[in-house]
Length: 105
Image (cartoon, rainbow, N blue to C red; front, side, top):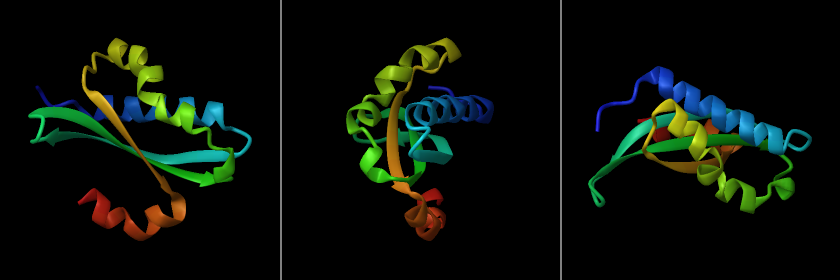
């Protein structure tokens, strides 16, 4: 698979952010969202890794919605020409601040 451009990964991050912030606008905020193309050597395929940083009242997070995010946004990703599986990884803002250097390297 060809490498996906940074413009596309930024658009994917925006789609994720718009979707999540729309669902939980009163209780949670999702920012930043970092999307990277990664390679899974076990399955021998590329995928999109999405680190989704959240802040707010975690008890208001609906895990059925967040777990279904890849299916929900799949039509929008298809419209962008993205045919890679999305792996969302949710992390609290405080934990992100402590670990972002390690995660992004």
